[in-house]
Amino acid sequence: MNKLINFIKESFIELRTKVTWPKYNELQNNTTLVLVASIIFALVIGAIDFVFDNALGWFYKNF
Figure 1: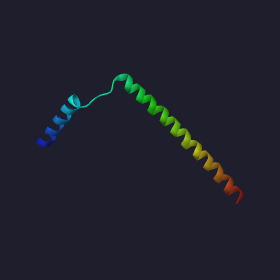
Figure 2: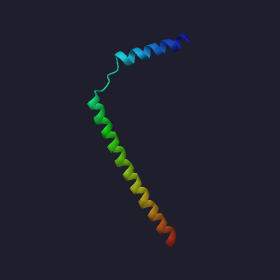
Figure 3: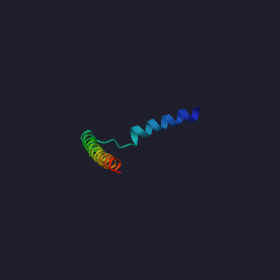
Figure 4: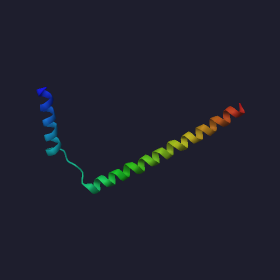
């Protein structure tokens, strides 16, 4: 149990003193970038799914 308490204390100290936290505007920019990239990725995957769905539907209907 002592090791666990020591680990938690050392982790808390490391988070407060050694971790470099981003500034608020940098965090906003990175969040916007991730959101835009996620939307683009979702649209590309959706388009690929749409094409394959229609292509396989056409293939199964005709053959």
